[in-house]
Length: 305
Length: 191
Image (cartoon, rainbow over the protein chains, first blue to last red):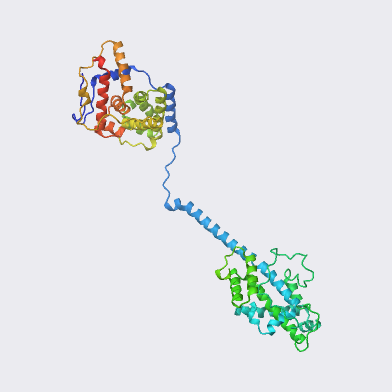
């Protein structure tokens, strides 16, 4: 039957075959007219012609490495610049937000101290000036105070009111007749809105000082006496000298204001720490409260908790 | 002129834009490929779907065609891969069970009783024998059937069949022997 027919290359490499089976298969295949449907043939031949007719896309040369990396590198650069700008703007906004309440508190403090000039004179006269923040301030503060003093004098000159005359026109302040507490190193926290509301206490003579610094400077020249009692003779300074002292203190206030406005939370904390070290217990606690109100999310150092 | 050109020359001509070369090539291989698929799938519908996919792959691959093997080998390799995809998709992976790879094993052909196939002389009986053979082929395990059909439909060597089916030469040879043995055994009545 069977012809095991090594067609090629000998027995070992030949494909086993059965000629009789192959012959029957071929006859069956030749007789079998079944093939793919004519429609399928037509579809495939049309697809083949269409593929040839379509314009062949030119082979694109591979892009150099820098062209391939251009898009991702550009995106990364844009992201980096955007993030940097966002952080910078955020920092600037934080800096702009921080000084506003401090300035208002400074004004309030100044108003309070102006309403009781005797109180303000007390620490200076008693030689405890080194307890005040102005005294604690570093050396550049003194230069700033000088500059502020000069600007105040210039303002007086422009207003045409000699300092000595103004001081003389006013009744002498109470002097040390009513000793009061030392001025706050850190005034109470004011509302966050930058404009002072109109409903501020009318009794506060300098309530508009924060809103209008120029007006505040003008008002410092005419402080209202808090106490109507005449000063004890021999204790109160001469009116001209008193006026000069007040003017100098006012001029000291300005750089203090500027510095406090620009101080960072770290600097503020350092000042609180100084107060604590100085043993001014209620003051540093109060200042700390104000700090926490101002920077509620700022982590407090261990020594101030 | 085109009739005399080899398959590879026709495919190269088609690659270079000669649509008519593809028509010749298509006519030359359409029946055998369709038959091979029909016997493998047992369903004309599936065979037509696979047939179309295979020729479309040939058309789409024309740009990168290089003569690295005979066109028939290339075409049936595409067909084999498509058929395997179909088997996998239908959850009917062809089993490799059966023929050992060892060429020294007992030859299945020797186990089949060996009187020659009595080929009938009249037309009717020959057609009956042909139909019986097709039924036996379609009853073979898929891998043996594929090997047998490749050997019948093409003039491929053992190495080419082994290459297309992804096995070594001895495995392909064993599959062929087992296929022949089973077919003979199935046609015992004609002996």
